[in-house]
Length: 259
Image 1 (tube, rainbow, N blue to C red):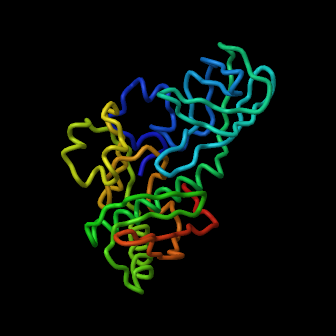
Image 2 (image 1 turned 135 degrees about the vertical axis):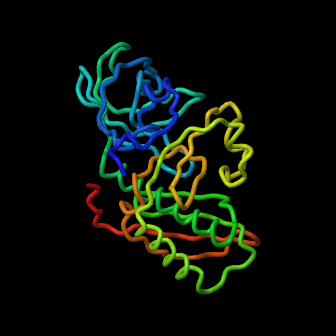
Image 3 (image 1 turned 90 degrees about the horizontal axis):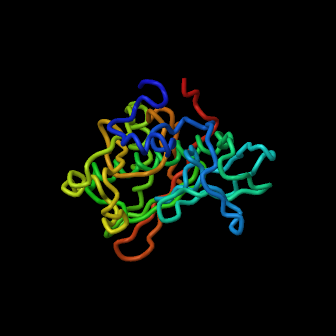
């Protein structure tokens, strides 16, 4: 399985140097400098960051930024037309200040496990039914995905739960890869959400590869092995209308030891 940070392939050097979360989801402490300050908005931009800005149904990271004027509580992180901004509470530092970022690791790791569980669900549905995902959302240890099933059988939840946990127990390796956009657009299994949701200027495309099960474009944070997810329960199946069926799941605690 390797160690955190090693299961990444073909990362653009400029991205690896600035968006640490994109190449190492286990990186939750980092040093940086303040690149820009928006005093009216109560937010700062850092030269590099490990805070995930949210997207694809995954909430942003929270945590603390330690600066020369004391700790800043990070209440939101968002990508704004390219750059990543950190909304904070506390005395804003000056541009050029050296700071240390500390991501709320317990929350991040629960989101990593949850996001990976949803990818396993997506992979199971694709492998068994060749049906893509049309939407989803998550919070720590809970999530849901929507699929265009024409109908939904009464025992679908139980069958899907069994399949998800079988794949978890196989301890599939999970790799972050970066592939040319042209190659991604030519692979219908790689981009399973609406292609319009991923702007064409994003090139190369970041791909999460659950080796042996599921491979698709994704920008979020994930664990290194399906075994790290822990046991998953399907807690509900719902019909949201014609060709729109929802599957909800929860990830059990206590967490397994990643080592």
